[in-house]
Image 1 (tube, helix red, strand yellow):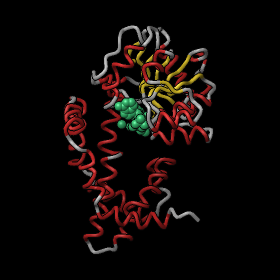
Image 2 (cartoon, helix red, strand yellow):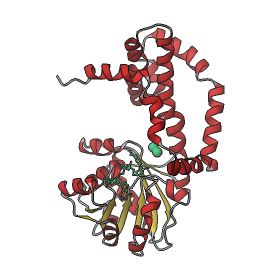
Image 3 (cartoon, helix red, strand yellow):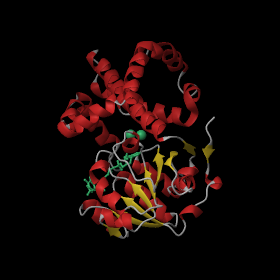
Image 4 (cartoon, protein in one colour):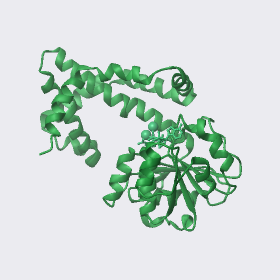
Length: 325
Ligand code: NDP
Ligand code: MG
Ligand code: MG
């Protein structure tokens, strides 16, 4: 059983008297900067001139060019998009002080060797296991989202204590923090988003919807069935577990789910999951993605799903469901 750190076991003291620079004021950067400041810590922001620079200013931060923010800080949260991190790294590296702590929200660039920080700085990770918006929203509700922490290099002797303090500062210890490695976090994150979260759910829902529509049922009815209710079932699983969910649906749904689900999502599907998971571990996926990032067009890939009929139906239904009262 993994050790789970909770709020009262972790202290903010390792960050007291230290200046934290949050580099990048995007989805994670904004949420983490605001939470750390609300936790009473000294936070500045590093950003290029532009919309997130202006937003950070409006939200009351001292904002500096990235290099300058790094040079002014003891702890640097490197929260640029993963594929941008190597491009901006030169500016960070030139300004990194010995004995500082470099923190990531995902292990990607370190694990795959796209960034190689000098020996005199700590390399740590606090990876929230939730989208950035939830990091802020849960914090404001007095709760937090779970996170993983890891120490890749301890140059100061304080790396783990600082990482845990950061996790507390963003509210993660309220929900539970597990220690991991950069390798485990990076690989499980990529495998999880491909097989289950982003890829798996999207295709499961879409193919379920297509099946219903191809059988002649109304697209709107199929949408409620395959997509809208998926959220409600997921909420039950999230809150009560698999068995708890089964106990809360009709007995017919319970029987049908238990006897048919595993025939559709069968061992063959699992074998394919394993194949694609192994591509992450071997680095093959990352090689492909780095090449695509340089030469391909992600907007083009989005078209297949963006122009799918389920989206047309969805827009119509969401307009009604989410209409302001
Ligand atoms: P975002 O895409 O939200 O980051 C956008 C920020 O990066 C903006 O401030 C943007 O500035 C800045 N930026 C982009 N390109 C450049 C550039 N070339 N030079 C300078 N600044 C630039 O990133 P995320 O928050 O999604 O990701 C940050 C890290 O967090 C990643 O490691 C990611 O894996 C991790 N993570 C993200 C999660 C999420 O929910 N998104 C969840 C868990 C981890 P501008 O406004 O000027 O463009
Ligand atoms: Mg990810
Ligand atoms: Mg993730």
